Amino acid sequence: MSEKETQTEQVVPGGSVAGPSYDVLAVKSNYGCIKEGSHSHHGLNYPDSFLADTFSKQRAHMIDERKRRNRLSRAIQTLQGLMPQMDAVGKQKKGPCKAITVERAIDYIIALQWEVERLRKASSATTQDAGVLFDLDSTSNNAANC
Image (cartoon, rainbow, N blue to C red):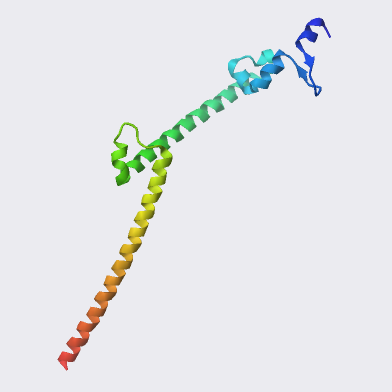
């Protein structure tokens, strides 16, 4: 080994090689080095097609992720507008966080389900009472006709 190589690369405990390039790669990922354009300085050589494909995938992922976040935000805002107790909160400059909105929506939906069940039971009881009254009326009319 030359003097220069001896100064830049040293063997550390465990038998691995240490030096300026290895220190950078220990802190940054290969992708980080590719992104800033210093990958070839650290011995990372990739074909141009690989680099273009990597950045294309990253860009596509960023766009898809932004669309997903925007869609989620619109859905949360719609949810806030649909719930009466959150309508006033939503009109403030900054409404509650998304987790609180979802938790309140769950509570609201559960309360609505209980209300629907209560109304169903009340309706069926009223229908049964009306049926009994109808039977009594028809029985009394038949008795009067005899």
